[in-house]
Length: 607
Image (cartoon, rainbow, N blue to C red; front, side):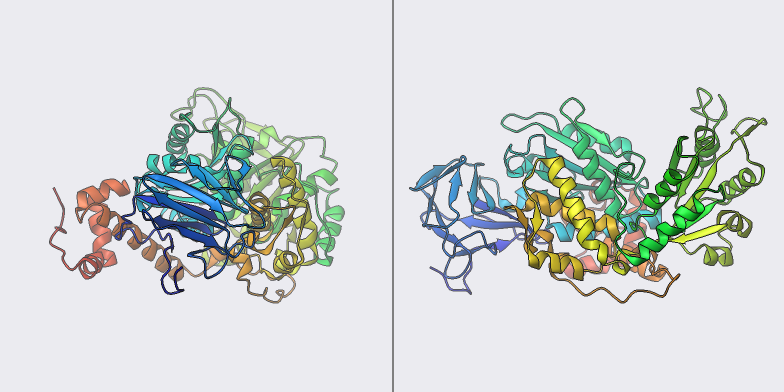
């Protein structure tokens, strides 16, 4: 046995790549918060358990204090159960005697899954694989970078087709080996993996996903869902869409892109369980019968599109089409074509005439999400349509009458945008004939229990799970959390908790570190005053965070390239001159010299 100061296990940290593990065999224990790596040494068996004096301490209540012993002797790996309550399972059977395990084989320790790796160092195997909460933080930083600099970003969810086809440990190493060094991976659930791909557009993401799901010997069939920036405008929305796309994927259509509309928005039940939302829906019923434009304000993920759909469903236009678009997801050069249509030959690639959103919704409703993202030219064109009730296709002079009701939504302060000159005052007057404010989830705590049960039921039904409820501690944590990502974040947390839950009730540890290390929600804001979303922090804070994140990426690429800028630029898929400029502006030469003790490799531009 060892003392607490002499632990043989280390938590994998993707930043510690400079200290490779030299063990020829390793035990990888997959936990809710990440992966625990245990180097195995010949003729030195280790006891795994929940508490000291176990050699390997695993913070999981499903394990006994001294659960199992694993050893590596004369080239053979073996494991034995130590009379644990929940048992040790190998090849699906609970073991009662010492059992040999093959390299790459998975072992079940209570509710925790482990796999054995031989010959390849654990560090190389798990390079870029990080804990889920850390992955979400990186995703938020990368979304910030994409928004600030207009760069592409893709999020992939790879999952096994069958729920009972084993742990992702069987195929995660191949996924890691297929991706670039700058890509980041996290274990989302026992049978699902998330991969964040910076500087990757929709087409590139599709090619990567196709290679990931290519059948491999000894692996279960895999499918992949793809979500990309700017079609999804936040980290939570990227996760939401990637998961729903992965769920929709099938063996015959193994790669699926996220749909253009809010995931499940058309079928999701409206939950009204708080005074604030009862007030909102009372207004919805009052204004639904008219055709006046409506402006819906609220934080990202609060449910603005659900309210817009309710307006349409309650209106006399309910039998006519409802067409929705995220204005921020369409390039400025294409937005007028998407909204108002185009004629054949109007621009390169316009091989045939096509009606726009307004024509498609004739007699119905057009929902313009994130209307504050429209360019000046698109704002002017939209204003003309609202004034004349006619659209003109790109490449035509003919006006087409359109009878549509416009419902716009935004998380921005449009009055402030008018004051700064980035949004037209006359357009705002046209859009906000009636304004609805959707309160954030922290201002409607009465709905958290109801929504949690609804999302758990949806997740269990979709994945064939037997998870039915929440234990008291989990419920208390859900009620206490501030939910900066609002309803969308709640749904994402419940979806993942259902997948990692080992029993029929979600426990506190299933919710993730963000929820378990909870800070109480701030007091509700004053009526009519929106609390800014995280994405609306000051520009200075944006730039500081982006600068720090870019610096980390560049330093990591330089380490991998041995200080060679040309190779580092290739790793980052960045022009060499851009890399040199960023190194100079971020002071990376000094950081590199301080970290490595020598900057001789860093010329102005490597050849």
